[in-house]
Length: 447
Ligand SMILES: Cc1cc2nc3c(=O)[nH]c(=O)nc-3n(C[C@H](O)[C@H](O)[C@H](O)COP(=O)(O)OP(=O)(O)OC[C@H]3O[C@@H](n4cnc5c(N)ncnc54)[C@H](O)[C@@H]3O)c2cc1C
Image (cartoon, rainbow, N blue to C red; front, side, top):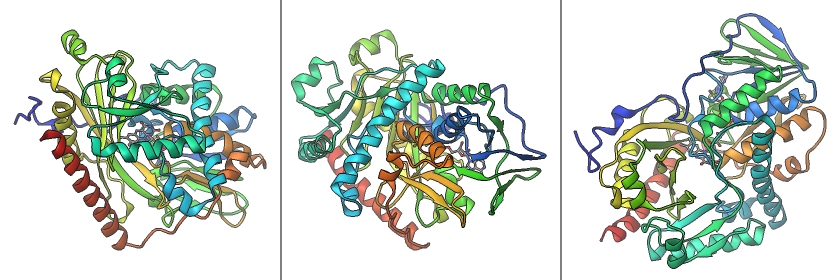
């Protein structure tokens, strides 16, 4: 079956891991004995690896448990936008925390960019980082008012951005589907697979004992926490849950965060003629002003990577590693709609992953357990390249008894999630309404 792009059945391009990486050849051993450590970290994404690295730099003995391989989760599947504090859900934040706290939270996002840039340099991670800034764009005049309002809010809270009209976008070579937008100078795009595997390599080199293919099945609280895998256990005075969208399945944060499935599609490299027709010399990462945004980027090896547009939620906060055919079809359709000058473009891969979302869209970072020795981070809401890396510093300080000012800024009461089937009903209706309204805008553009 051919779609409008001539891409034979995009679902056949499905990968059960991110398109950016392969399972590492040096897979670390699985845990089949009982070990002890100063800290056990569960989850090997940006958050878990960064926490482990920060702790290792203070000479702590760290064990990291990962169900598959470090980079298996969202950290190896995302679009690679290293973004600061622009384009966040400020209105939602303001319902829960003061304007002053919002300002500090925006600073947390902004500092996340600097943190990642510093770590890339410190560990010498070659991850194709392009410090191009990022563009939030409108594809139809009806989106301009909201886009300007959001930009003004971001500017007010400390994430600076500049509005660019159609002439300025054309002068920059941005593809013509994008009519206007705002550019944030802070940040850019990177190759997330290379970044997360670079962190993994740095953690191994720093002496972190990583156990892969070692899913946590149970943990027992106490003055020390025992983390059990099928065949072994790791015990420490502190455990850090860096399992993001997978956390509710572990019986933790079920009342605070919801996993949401986000999908991505990557093309084969564009030909020189297609590249010339496209323009886009600076390769700024672009997101759109839809209710469920589209993201479009051009990689250093000339592939288009499109993500989001279609979100989904699985009943009971489950996180099955399965294809999302509807999302891939919609993303494939976007190739023709946003980039008609390219003609046929072959799809190389599609994949999906899970982010976690709190009802107030704010990060969920803190501790639990009678002794406060079970730490967690989740609620990245799809903005985790910077913050889920930077959170490692905050959590490592917390283990050492230091309250980092940014951790203090993040503390607030997260709204309680709904029980099933109410949550399923709410998520489905919310996504359904957003798709309906976004499609109305897209239809206007087509017409
Ligand atoms: C398609 C997509 C596009 C995105 N685009 C962007 C973007 O452009 N910019 C941005 O800032 N953010 C983006 N995000 C979000 C970003 O990827 C996440 O915020 C970030 O990767 C979260 O990192 P993490 O370490 O908290 O979680 P994860 O990377 O999900 O890591 C959690 C880890 O825990 C492991 N785990 C789970 N259960 C267990 C268990 N029982 N035992 C042991 N290990 C376990 C998992 O295997 C996984 O490796 C995107 C996400 C997706 C899915």
